Length: 425
Image (cartoon, rainbow, N blue to C red):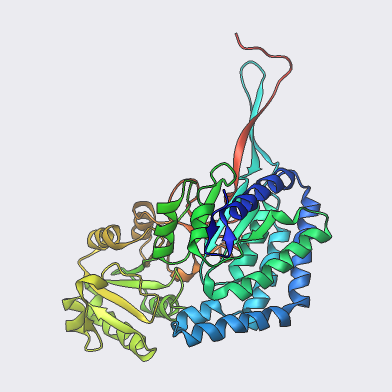
């Protein structure tokens, strides 16, 4: 097929890229751990050596984004600051230190006929990662996929094209230095969605697609793909302030969850107060939020308790603001909080603040989300914070992973059996 995709990449070229990834995966699936770790160490070294060049390319993207009037929260996600750069390198080093999940045999058991049956960790194969804004995802995705024995096709957003191409060059150089097929990590070198659409038809060469970005991107991928998609549409995260909450614990948790980085998927978007504690604590919490620049949109009862609340619109409930905005609601107790979360949550992160052990355990058992926490900020639902090293994304679907996806979530398991000549009767 030779038709052209937007004049930048033909359909045949997209097909060839996918075939090259499949061919490379036949090599990477059996790479020794030492070789994989050497590639990752090379990536960390090259990131440090080429930092100035990469940041110069990133500056081009940031300048263009500002000229287009992109929101400040999105600019923050786009920028490869010194702190983000240091975290990228640290993330690579943390993944090197993690045990290799490939080849490990678990649950080896003897059957009555003496056959030993277990399950071995194996790579998923070829993973396509489609993402927006954060160029550091290029590094996170590549090193996680490579350590887990997968190959990866990366397609970042148009707003980060210079950054992503610079980072991809570093990854491919590290692969070549260790004698590994450089097609184990490829970047789709076009910003046109038609090329992505073509890539999403490659079910014979690609095993899994992971979109990471806004709801529009994820729905586009799901509608276009013939390949299984691991997704989360939105990060609508809540904190429920139980009647037995410690207010001194609750206030810093609320402020951290909403204001530290409001433009990320694990930021707080909805705050629920038990009516037994609302009159005393809600006005204080709302005042602190307003002082931090947060627009607080409340239900009628919340607005009656605090002049700092503005009435919420119907469309605000269940909304992912990704900005210094949130909704506040007074609920009659646990049952109403649970019902609200079931209606408006996105199965991402849900938190209860309480000193009541029984209520905390009930919340953990009954609330369905990829991470459910007690007395902690929503911001902890993150692969690095959970000890996974860097993450490739957070899944709010349950097949085959739920929550932050680290190394183990980028593998599957096959059955292995050891016999001594057994035959089936």
